[in-house]
Length: 227
Ligand code: BJW
Image (cartoon, helix red, strand yellow):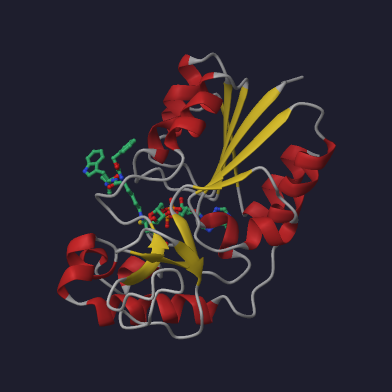
């Protein structure tokens, strides 16, 4: 019986709720170039395009609901006697809506805005744009989605790395293992002596680092594994 579990989730856990993944054949990066919409350089070059992209992403999640995999992880957290830390790369809010509480959004949340001038976060309000005034400093021309783009530092890395160093079970769910530092977590957990398990539709880039794997849709494999 493990005493400390770290769970990493990616876009695949939300796929059956109706949110697109990034690198599947019909994924987001097949439709838009990540350099245009998910880098600080892309934002500097064309902020209106980046705002339109995230407004479109936010609209797409308005009617989605947490699925059986999100709900199973929330039940695990409330029933498990030890520590469960859920680290998600997803910017949607389906984990918290399912009931997960000990949760880190390492790539941010797209329903929050970040002011590039004062650094304060605020709720995203409707169709904000670069010109929307920051609710904290009232400055204009500085608002961006509070998400982590390529070349930026993911959030709460120290807390995540401490949890990985102390965990005895590491679960990776619905992520292709292409994007670092998240893709390296399995190796960190392994060096700490954790059992490592992948639950994904198909073997990920890091498949060789997992002790065990279950391949299939998250709504099937996650509830079966955690219960
Ligand atoms: C299902 C399913 C179903 C489908 N059921 N499964 C060379 C080497 C190493 C690193 C680098 C390098 N060159 C550059 C870097 C760094 C770079 C990086 O990793 N680049 C790689 C592409 C090479 N990383 C960064 O820049 C990061 N920052 C950084 O490294 O800072 C330095 C630092 C490190 C450590 C400490 C301190 C500082 C930042 C990365 C930011 C990523 N941002 C994005 C956008 C976020 C905002 C938004 O959402 O718009 O994050 S990109 C995108 O990819 C998004 C995702 O969170 C992320 C991961 O994608 P994910 O979740 O894995 O989705 P997919 O689509 O790839 O996979 C889905 C999987 O689900 C598939 O396997 C399917 O089979 C499966 N699936 N349906 C179960 N129903």
